[in-house]
Length: 107
Length: 113
Image (cartoon, rainbow over the protein chains, first blue to last red):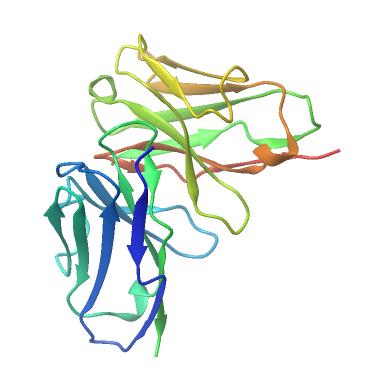
């Protein structure tokens, strides 16, 4: 199985900050990488698929980049509604596998 | 509006069975693989199963192989997950997922005596 390693596991940031989360795959997955956001007690919300394609309805402050094994999710200006846990997920081969999550907290 | 709506969860005893459903709307259902993903209490998501657009190819996580069966009815735009021989460790919220479309709201399965 492809292992997905996310970093950091948590971070504290202020409203207005630019935040970057990284995800590394244990082997090349081309651009088959998705990001999603999850708030406590809520279903995941898709943000990005194909490494850089914004899901319909997701604001442009979210962006994704990378290819092969190294990927990033950037939130350009953190807002109160963005405090949540973010996961990466590879969709290159089954089983789909997920990163361990990054909890974004208020500083 | 794109929607994936799961149903069928509930409380079941170990060894019991449940059938989950995932009803799709707002997109061309027949173009997409559909996945089931589960998330145990306080844990990260774990992939469970997937089904090809026409239902001819299915795959399962080792932990559920031989116990769970995924199927789809394209006329009803619905994917099913038949879960047999349920174990306590199958307790989780079960989500359906279409990679380029999104996630459902989930349905809770609790296996307990």
